[in-house]
Image (cartoon, rainbow, N blue to C red; front, top):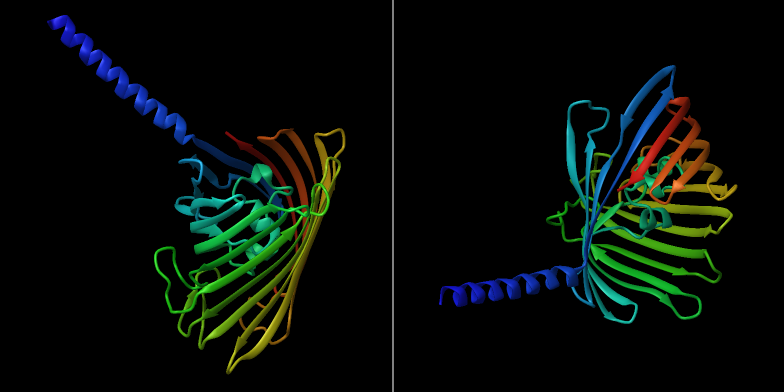
Length: 340
C-alpha cells in the first residue's frame, strides 16, 4: 500500500512537473542584456566609465500575444554615486490578423528610424552614441498609450504605426491634462535593405506643464508638431541613414517658431568586420525660438567600427562640435559594447 501511494504521488508529481514545464516552454521567454564601456579624451582630460546596463525581456504568451520589457540601469548624469532604474519599454502586443497588431504600453515613439530601431543596446548602434537631436530633446523618445501597427504588407513591404498616448509633459502612469499625443508613421521598402519613411507627431502642452526632458515650463498652451523624413539603407557593404525633422511650436502670445534638425550617417564595410564611417549633425533654430534650447549646432563625427560578432563591437570615434553658446568642442572616444 505504501509503495502504491508512493507511486501515485510520483506519477502526480511527474504530471504536474511536465505540465508546468510544457507551459514554460510554450511561453518562450527570453532574457538578454547589453552594456558598454567607454574611454573619453576631452579637453586634455582622460576618463573611463560605463554607460547603460540594459535588461531586455521578450515572451511569446501564445500565437497572438507577446510581451516586451526593457529596463535600464544607469548613473544619473555625471554623478559618481547616484544611479537610477528606468523602465524604458513595456509593450503587450496582440497580433489580430496577419501582420496587423495592436500594442499597449510604453513604447519608443516611432517618430524616426533611429528611435524606432536602435534602443538601448549600444552594440547595435552604427556610431558610439545617438545623433545630437536626442540630447537636444527634439523628439519625444517615449509614448505611453495604444498603437495600431502593420508590417511588411504587399510588394512594397508597406508598414504603418498609428499611436495615441500621453503627452510630452506626462508620466508613465497618468496623463497630466486632457490632450493626447498623436503619432502617425508610414514606411515602404521598395528595394532590399532600403527603407523610406515619413512620420508626423502632434501634441498640446498645457499651461503650467513642465516638459521633463528639458525642464521647460509652459506659460500658455503650446502646440508641438514634428514632421520627419527618413532614407535608410543598410546593405552588405554600404550603410546610409539620413533623417530630417521639421519642428513647429505654436502659442497664442508667443507666436510660432520653426526648427530644422537633420543628420546624415554613412559607412562602408571592409572585409566584413571593419566599418569606417562618418556622421554630420545639424540643429538650426529660428532667432525667436521659444520652446527648444536656441543653440544652433553643427557636429562632425568620424570613426571606425570593428564587429567581432553581432553581440560584440569595438568603436573608435572623433567628434568635433560647433555651437553658438558653448563654442568649439573636440572629443575622442573608444567604446566596447556587448550583448549577453
